[in-house]
Length: 369
Ligand code: NAD
Ligand code: AHE
Ligand code: ZN
Image 1 (cartoon, rainbow, N blue to C red):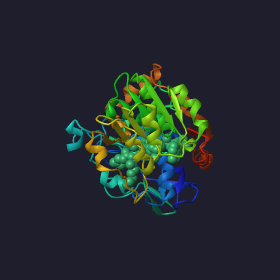
Image 2 (cartoon, protein in one colour):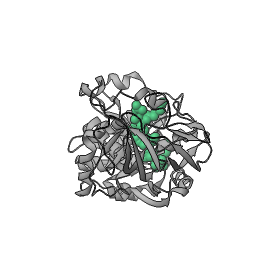
Image 3 (cartoon, helix red, strand yellow):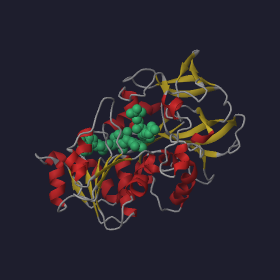
Image 4 (cartoon, rainbow, N blue to C red):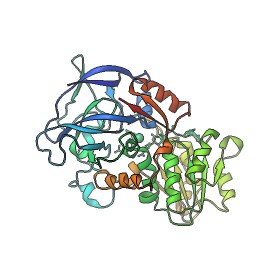
């Protein structure tokens, strides 16, 4: 099968729109025609070369939605025509992780997924006879992609496929980090660092959880109106202060916030987010993805005195079990996706969508094939 794809041939280089070859799905694999995809900061991060798991050439993309076109042998849960969202956090339902009841991380295909390969150790993509790698088990920057059946969820056919890609990563991650990872309670005070799609979705989650005070922090004041629409009550620009921002927040909140969320991927900000938490009980959740070689630091005393450092992947959400319900919540007006889609472009303009993200001008660009 020939497919239009945006291939990352080398780190730091623009994506190239080329025609690749996509092999048929093998056992337990499904071929999906991607109709819409958006671009998450993690795609830009891997393209930059900072991802320790980055392999090239690769078809990036993990926020997409489409229709099943072919199924491999042994696939029982999907058939041609099903509407689906690819999942970078699979759910096999059988591994130690899935059965633990303690995490959404699934170990079934994680090793090969991290190497850009399908579970049999090969790739379904090639360009001019040379292999092209998969990404995060999804590769939504190809019109036709092949994924494992455990990396896919069937959704309601009535759901608009040009909106639900945001549930494939950004919005689910933010909402889930509040509900599943932090378990924020009514009346809480929270600080959200970084007001991209992830931070804005965290704010939406905090509002749903009835947090009483939501402090939104970003160096780009253009992000504030949308944060306010989501439910932020206070805005802080770190550039306005000469002292560490955690000091400012501790002062503003009479001792620190109950919850903080780092939605940037900056290890210095991760420290600030932890240290902005209240002594004795404050919980800080790391969502941002930091580059190779980066490490977090704080005085252990910060933890000894009751602050808790946690992390969240895909918001702790089990995709195959929970995403159909979140799609319904969106269709019932309980989850806002529309506000995140600030731009619409054709797939051929994908590099422009990356530039918009880098310049801080977009939240999410929805790309149409
Ligand atoms: P984005 O680029 O749209 O947003 C980042 C925001 O952070 C921007 O508004 C920017 O102005 C702000 N910012 C940058 N440096 C700052 C600083 N020092 N202080 C305050 N604000 C600052 O990115 P996004 O798509 O929202 O993704 C955010 C992060 O979350 C990325 O690191 C991404 O890789 C990660 N992510 C993690 C998961 C997960 O499951 N853990 C899922 C999706 C994304
Ligand atoms: N490959 C990187 C880490 C990248 C990372 O942390 N990815 C997040 C999702 S970001 C989505 O936009 C994640 O889910 N991580 C859990 C996992 O199993 O990958 C590295 O540092 O090697
Ligand atoms: Zn993402």
